[in-house]
Image (cartoon, rainbow, N blue to C red; front, top):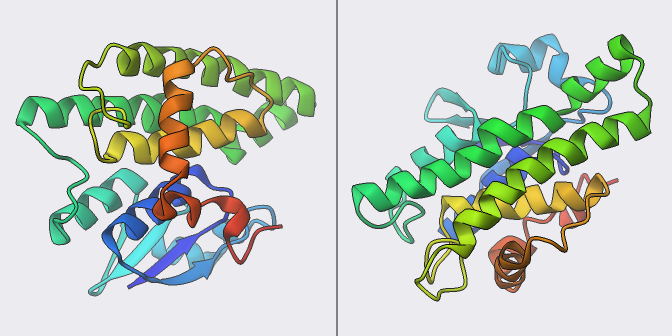
Length: 212
């Protein structure tokens, strides 16, 4: 199993957390996004989208972090990342998709480069763009998380799920883009619970060999 990622990629960060929770250690290949290696012919032969992460496994190449994590959960069932009933799993997926499908794409490097190059934005303008969309998404996540009555330390219970796997990297990105996360009290409680776990700590961008 070979995992292609970049230390600061939120989607690669999600996968690292999931691998750690499952006790799976793929061989890692570092793809430097700042140097544009994701656009190389070699990498596009693996993932035509030219995005990280990508995962080579059993003669196949998987792309898209949520698809990879669900594959991992299906092939390594313990601990479950999508636990509970069908309705409970749908709630976990919906929370994860708020982040992975609605918020994260708007802070993606290629989007930020586009608005700088084609819409006259400097770094401050790009940061303001990110702050707006991240704040909108986190406000929804805060409302959902705060409404839960289970009393556990994670979004949907006593153990981390796909929801928490997506939340932790997004809060890291919020800090990176200068968004004040103080209004998200429940999310910050969950983040503290996550950060106390080795699976989350060891996946942090600052602890990756390619961190710069």
